[in-house]
Image 1: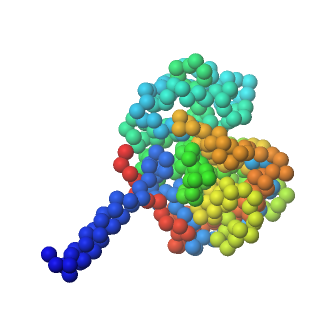
Image 2: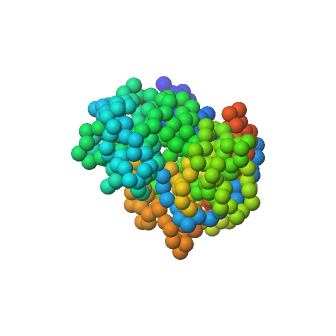
Image 3: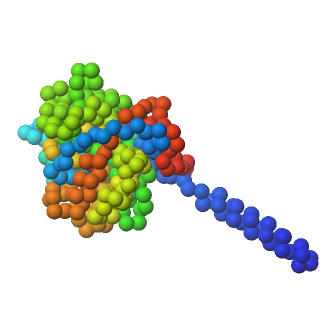
Amino acid sequence: MNTNSVKPLLFFLSFLLMFSCGKRQKELRDPYKWPFAATSIWNMPIGSEAEYVHAYLEPADGVTVDEDYIVMTPDAPLMEVKESTAGWDRSKSRCETTGKHLFSAPIPQDFVVSPRTWDGATPNAGLAVLMPDGRTIKQTQPFAHCEGSEYGTSQYMFPDQDLYGDGLYGAHGASKLSAIGGALRVGELTPESGPIRHALKINVFARKNVYYDEETIGFRWPALSADGYAADHYYKDRTNPMVKACRMGALLALPSWLDLDALSFETEPGRILAQAFQDYGAYLVDDTAWDVYALITEWGPAGRFSDEFEKNWGFPFAEFSEDSPWKRDMDKIFVNLHVVDNNAPDRIGGGGEPRVPLAPDFMKK
């Protein structure tokens, strides 16, 4: 073979190698860590035709987390979950059961959710657990699994969801939105994890920030409801202008025209979150019931987001001091949030060209 024929052959072989490597390196996503269809509300970016209405959220006294219990261990032994009617009554114990069987699900026995381990006195405690078929998500609230007990307890059940489907609904009590979609997951918002690539979920103090009237009943799509006490509680201590668009289920985002760098964020995680609020926004899913902002985060067998956050950044996620750079960064985000007022089933994120690419295909499990 002469040298004139060798060079084209080598070029062709190099091209084939690059092409095959490119195919092998195509990004795929793990459905256990990044669930639901690319066109789900939890994965759709804000669109170029989004219509923004300032939410005028009032500055809060602090920032904290509302933990979703996310259990993605379909091969674990089944745990029986029995009924407890303690609910959010602080005089009663969620560890005690009335004995009624609710369901059984693959929940590891070493995942303990009890007054000794959970955050707050009576947390919302929505559970999303992946069933043995690897795609059915069962949801319930408020879940507990106390020390020394072989069974868990809960009270309210919600329709099953498909891990690979739209995944809209679940165990957030006010809005009935998902207890897994939109949560900040373990492994996200770290110094190495890169941008957040899905919508978020938030709670705000409804007494100051969530609109209610007899026409809207305090919620909007995709929420199915508002809190049962909404008529007597929402918007009762409001000082900012009233915003009818700001109801349970509202998609709240930093508007496209806002220069995030001009806000002068003092922390790296604050700047990362701001980008997610601008690219994807956050769904309003619950009332904090006190004057704080809350982001929804994961706690489960895979770990606890709030513990990982403090380990990575050197300060806690929950913060109540006005002297804290983290609290100041959260104020910059929340007081600038706008409602995407034309968010709808046929134009999720407001429609038009998405700000960022859609979620990639799933890897096989």
